[in-house]
Length: 293
Image 1 (cartoon, rainbow, N blue to C red):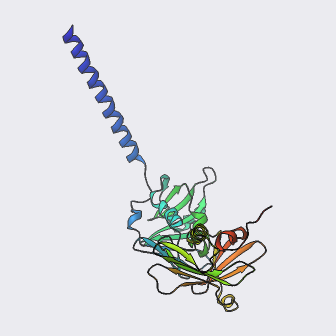
Image 2: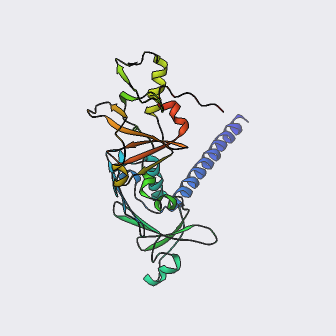
Image 3: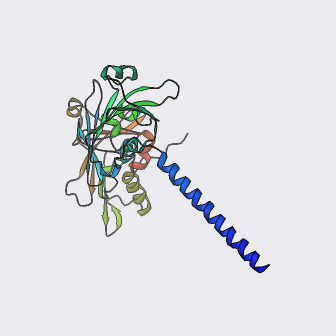
């Protein structure tokens, strides 16, 4: 009897082992059966070029680990938007076929693509959307693929859409700040970091208030960023705000302006305008009272 129990136990272990192996092998085969649009590795991509009909070409370049917009003008780029573009490389394919000839591309909207994006000189042309599945026709290496498309809205947007919305780049740290007291008081307040503690020439500001104010600037995130035309820059007043960043000798100069609903900060050196809701004035200026309903 004991021998029988032992034999059954061994058989049970063998069955469990075979089941695990079969499931593991099946899952592995299932994973391998998913065809991706390309074998390119997102980590190997250093350049992204976007061509749109009747719009300026957009060129993005990776410098070390950060990305920069190079054309039509230089600007810092949102890593989130870069990641969305790079996700195209690992997009699953839901169908593929080879066009019979160049003239057959027209029925898929690929004779004049809505946008062409090139990554390290590998080009992807975006055509029409298939009427039933709503998947996008993409021409890549002389083959047409059907994919779920999440990137076309970004690829067909203006260059402004790629700019990082953070006023202070993520890897920079504020060391010193000079700015007006409030929207109605243009007298300048200076705030310095001395041995890890914030100090101001306005003695009414407490250490906690100074820390909150600096954090407001350090993590300020605009609702919109846009490039101003040269003629718009020439009509601007002198900067009222200066931000000194760690390991940078020259401060970032900013022009503060307001409209009925927005507070804007303009960097005249880069020509970028950062647009915030008016309520942000309570976080960015020392004496701006908190608005109440």
